[in-house]
Amino acid sequence: MSVTDIHKDPGQLTMTVVTELDAPPDRAWQLWADPRKLERWWGPPTYPATFVDHDLTPGGRCSYYMTGPGGDRPHGWWRIVAVDAPHSLELEDGFADEHGAPSDGMPVMVMRVEFTDRPGGCTMTLVTRYASLADMERVIEMGMEEGIRSAVDQIDGILAGD
Amino acid sequence: MVVGFSDRTDIDEAWADLVFGALADRTRRDILRRSMDGALSVSALARNYEMSVTAVQKHVAVLDRAGLVAKRRRGREQLVRTDVDAIHAAQQLLDRIEVLWRDRIDRFTDVLDETTEGAAP
Image (tube, rainbow over all chains, first blue to last red):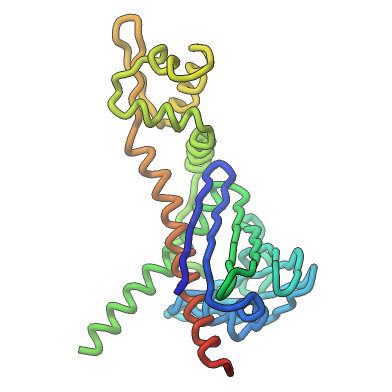
């Protein structure tokens, strides 16, 4: 059971997500540190993520792509800013071209995740900062597309099962 | 590549910056709340704050430029009315980001629960 509190700050262009997890920090950390576990939650079900490179050290690079139902493959990258396992991780997340090279003029988000102990588990606090409102809009447009496809596919799946 | 990527014009971006810049101030958010029914003038609004009518006038001008309020003359007074549709549009933008994150966190906790159940006691 987890409780998620989301705080949006339009002035600062940040979104803070606070989730109470029923597991200690080192176990929750594995969902970021183990690329095979990370792949299972980073992308939506119809756009599963595949991490090609995954180096969680300061200055390290990760690159990934997501595979859509039509075979389309949006690519993304991370640049690791700071790591303190299993307590905190700060990274930049951006879009890449089909060769994995960062795309010019595309949004880059700064993400910071922290794990703090609490009785029975830990609290994961995730702050995402956008450079501009236009960036926020682009991220939404891309994400919404994935979300809509995902919902449509689920409906199709239910209908096919009858 | 990513389908459904709609082109944003400079005008859209400028509008968005104006709207969120206007919403980032506590006094201006309070003015929006008080101006929902469009019955208050700038000087009537100013009585709620420890600042000059001119200062409140400036806040209203910021909201006006962002399209969040409309001003209407009544005799010597200017009545301020909040544009509820504009507020709604800004809020929707943020709500959509929230949905994306809720979905992602749901997946995160599912994977975590699985790995926790699978662990030796």
